[in-house]
Image 1 (cartoon, one colour):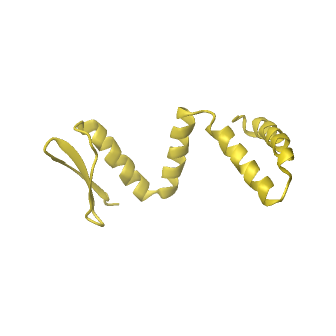
Image 2 (cartoon, rainbow, N blue to C red; image 1 turned 45 degrees about the horizontal axis):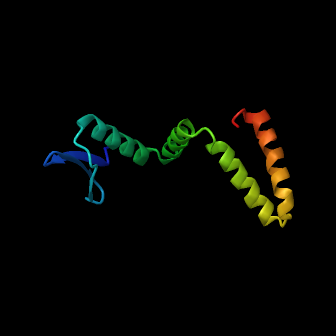
Length: 108
């Protein structure tokens, strides 16, 4: 597959150009290696969109291990609110859900 993003340098700063839309975007870096990594990541994300989401989750989890616990809490609160459960029951339901996910995935 052809690369969608092209890298070029102007006045010491690297830019990306989208081959489809011809839009140019400054990468705000003068480091060739860093610019190439950004270009490669963009090309990979354009080629396989699902992989980009998985990589983003991996980066977020590595940066903040509590991100999965926050996602579980938000999902439980949203579901409980949509089902009309009383607000006082939500902390108990959230605690039980964390236990279940800890046992199943060993994530939290």
